[in-house]
Image (tube, rainbow, N blue to C red; front, side):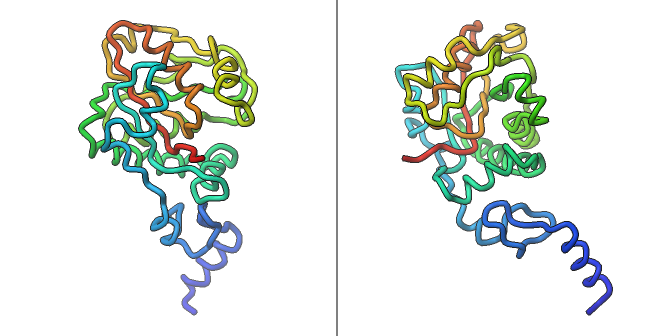
Length: 231
């Protein structure tokens, strides 16, 4: 075996690089997903279609100009695995990568003419504990493709809320009502805003945040998430 291959194998043994979708180690160093997982990614293509299921979530709730999710989310899936990696394993590079994918999809649609990108905020203490906001890293990846600014720390989460996982829609809304605040309206006034989160389920959290943004004069709200939960 060539010395370079021996060094590479030894390095891989010390610092294993595995697919964040399925855990396979048959993957190049510069990728986060193996070829099999890349081929199996459940794209929605919602960015191309008005009246898609993400937009229907917000009908009669808040006026959304356009909305999309990049992937379908289901339990024990590739998407669940890599979202867990983004949220709990500190993999910022992977979050940037998936943000790039979202940006490329948005750039191919004529329905998302945005001026600025806003991440759904975490409660400050929670973000400090985690070390980052995964929605903000996704925004950075989108920004890299669309060349639009990310407006950080202007929309804040004022209070810590209980986990939404086991709550139904009404409980989720009550849990997040009056949770968000815009610190400086002038940064968003008159702009087409893209509000970004990692996963949309009932939409209650992003609705509550979007409702605050829509109080600002002449704002149009667009929504994007990395995934939408399927029933």
